[in-house]
Length: 405
Length: 110
Image (tube, rainbow over all chains, first blue to last red; front, side):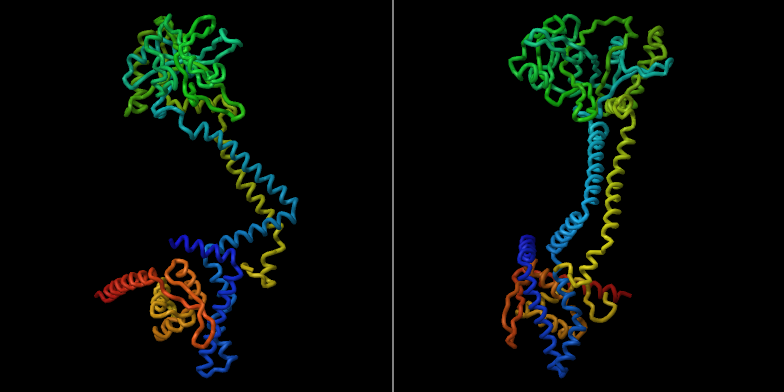
């Protein structure tokens, strides 16, 4: 209630400034005269009384100023004055205006660009359920001193069977399909996945279903889940598409599902919004046959979802033991091979650091750009100081133009 | 606390104005004089702070004002206490009494 009243009173003094000013004037003058009369009654001459009262009260103008600037509306008024003054200065100095606008535009632009990049790759969590529990499993070849991002199928299967730290351990590999039984043949880029990859990510198709464990076997692997964009762009977002048969690389595949629009795997980082990274267009089962002697055929990306409450260090210790056992069991192929467990986010961001547009310097660029805006501001400020040496406001004050007039 | 005589204890001006206005509708100068007289010259209210306080109290809805003629036939703005102002005065008076008593107890402690 009192807020509304204060608002109304403030607006009144803003828009009916003259009347409010007159009233205050009259009230203050009245105050002054009554005080003078009181002194005259006590036997002072009119002139002396006036002088005395003025000494006691101080300047009427100052009092008016104090009362006038006590309410919130005086901030609005000062602000408007500053704005008008700024506009005036800009108009009288077009050269400065151009430079100021340009430097500010540059500063703001660079900051926005870099921040959206840093936000996308460093600050935002991965778009999966409880993504902090997602890890990538890689091998480290001690002999050559390199990380191997891809893992052989037999090793993956042994890890998945023997480890105790994971709710799910899933694998994927990139795959390309030629789609031919449509009006215009088309190339689709996607991934082959183990049947538990989507559950491991906590993702579900919005239409249809996920792969059954049974469908992830050689000969039974002719199902396909489409990405939302592919379903929309190539199949007209037709719900009847579920159950249809597509000819992919000359073989029949049944469409069993469509993923949500935001789903993408492996997670990639858009370098700029105008050049989006390639998104996965389909998922199909791995359907790999187990050949125990293919331990050095590294072709699978392996991710895992840690069990709730399991620390990364526990999973690392768990996998280290399994890795050592496998190295002893299969010295020909697994000797010198260590197993590493890394948070999935680190792997994604690390990829950008290593291979990305900024080749590992995005943070450095960011800190550089963060400095641009203050620099351009201070640059402008220096100009302002230089160009306002005419001491315009002081001159106004000198002529007796008060802040409120 | 005041160093030189004439300063008000911070935050008490509103209470004093409310009390003065509660006695009868009264104009700005009357309020200044009455506070000075009743306090026997201990408090001298500066016109600037007085009018700022009027504005504040009016905006809080504790007093309202109207233009009337004085006994000397001069136009003056008379301030009148509102119901809300009365309530505030009584609660502030109670609070003040409590505080004064508490401070006195502390100062008299030996």
